[in-house]
Every structure is written in C-alpha cells, then in structure tokens.
Image (cartoon, rainbow, N blue to C red):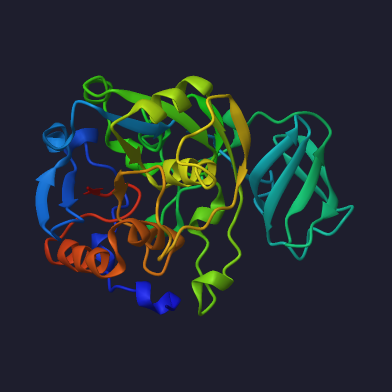
Length: 326
C-alpha cells in the first residue's frame, strides 16, 4: 500500500474557509461499514444513529492564539510549546535569519534565539512573559487561504474547550452546540493538536512516515466510563489516537489518571481496539487522517464516500461538513 492509494481529487471551491452561521447546521454523511451503505443526512440527525449505551468521547483542548509577528513585521513565529513563561519552542519564518543569538521584538519585549533544534525549530528566550491573548493570532490551516478574523475567536473553538494548549482545533467537535451535547452521554479527554496534524505524508510508503507527537491527558473517571460503554463513539481523529494509544496493550483502559505523549500512526491494516464508531470531518488527500479513517472503515469504502461527498458538494476540512462512520 502506498501513500498515493489514499488520494482523491477535490475541487478547490469545496474547501470551507469560513464556518456556517449555525454550528449544528452541517451536513452529515453516514457510512455503514457492515453494508457499505452511504446516507446523506444532517448533523442534527445524529441522535437517530446513537444507542442508549453509547458514549461520545470528545477532546476538550482549547486553541491558543499561537501565531505572533515581530514588531517590525519581518519575522513570524508559531509557538509550538511554552516550556516556561519566558521560553518558547517555535517555528520561525524566515528561519535563515534567526540564528543563535539573533533577537526578535514582540510587543516591545525582546526575545533571543537560544537554540536551533535539529528539525529547525527555535528556542526563543524572552526578557519577560508575552501574553498570547494580547499579541497572538490563531494559526488557521493553510487551506483556508486567509488570516484569522474576529469570528474565528469563537468559531475555531469548540463550545466545551477548556484545556489550553492546541494550535489547531479538534474540528469534529466544532459542530456541537451546548444543547446538542447535552442530549448525549459523553466524556472528555485532552489532546493538544499541533501543526503536525497538517504535515503531509511525503514518503511513498505510509510506514516510512515520521509521525508527530502530541500531549494528552485522560482522567480515571473518563477511562471508567469508556470501559463501561456499550459502544465508544470517538468525536474526531484526535480522540481516536489517544484511545488507541492507551488501548494498544488491552482494550480495557487503566482506570487511573493518565498523562503523556502519543505518536501513534493509525493506517490500514491496523485494527482499532477501543473505538467502535467515529464522527469526523473530511480530511486532506494522502493525509495521516484519511488513513486513520480508512483503518476503521476500509480504504475502498472511504474513498468511495469521499467521491460521493465531492459529487454531492459537501463542504470539506476544518469548517466543513462531517462524516459518521458506524
């Protein structure tokens, strides 16, 4: 199996660059793994497909405004990790200028390049802490082809977001309103989505791809409720990655508070151990995310569903429509 085996053609006009006015107004494709049946519904129809013993598991990470610019506008920094209030690990553009010892000024505060990591990231050491809420912008995905706007502060954030640390939103959760969420039995975990989620698979064989690592947390209470559920419905690929990372040794999760990092890469023929069903958005061609969905539903069925979504003019990617895989 090659990376090209996960390709599909997408007209650019189907990429959703802005959200719908109504969070819960998205269309929802329903894909039945057993029969191969594909239905065209709306997100508000989700209750029709859930059972009384289902548990929805959602990612409560909160997106931070991680993109900042130098006061002279010449340097762009993306804060990947705040190692301390005055130390950031960053992507920097243009990187060639930012060698060890070089300075950058943001909001009147001077930062110095303290180290250049092997992968090109920079460690920036600031004279004093910088408030991202004052100086930062949301790092919207490149395919939106625009800078963040005022509306994104609310809409590129789930209504249940609480644990700060993500650079990108767990987009399957963007469809939920408080009223819709209240209708279902649900539990939370946290995975701080990083820029690696958009990193393309540039190798011919998926198994040669170097998967990014992301920080997660799962409480003992959530683990116990997941173990007790009749069917675990993951809301998003980020939830799926955490649950399958923790379930690699046993489908029964340890009922203790768990924190760590995962670099699990899920692609066919991986067999999911914990997740029984998945609510997810539509993903980029040849991406690790479409590969994950294919591990659950089968590559042929997933690509058929994507071709159908293109024919039916679904809205794609972060602000787009969703797919329920049963």
